[in-house]
Length: 115
Image (tube, rainbow, N blue to C red; front, side, top):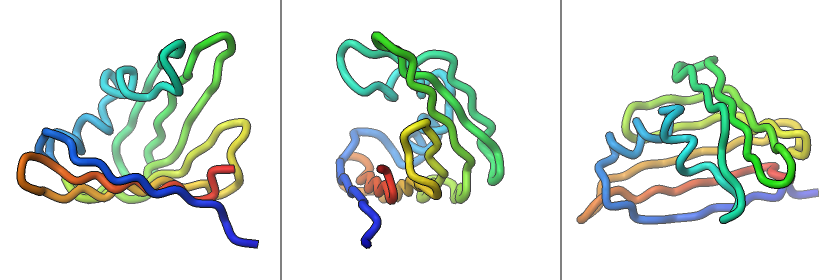
């Protein structure tokens, strides 16, 4: 059986440094980690070091807790972390690759074993 994975590519109008720092900032996590328009993120924490943990709760009609451990932190180019929810598969992992491009940063997000 093959592990289910998903890869998304986007260009953001920000530098790799800005994207990298925003991804690790608990205040920014509250702004971008939502599953839909009727959801909001609550109670974000982040200890941005390899082995450090992050957590937040997506809140809609129900609370959806999320957490993980930072596995790779290469400044301004690579962030990897485990993805832990009550519904995620064991060893679920997210990798973010950041690369400077004209007008901003290309972000390649790959989530492996997300169900």
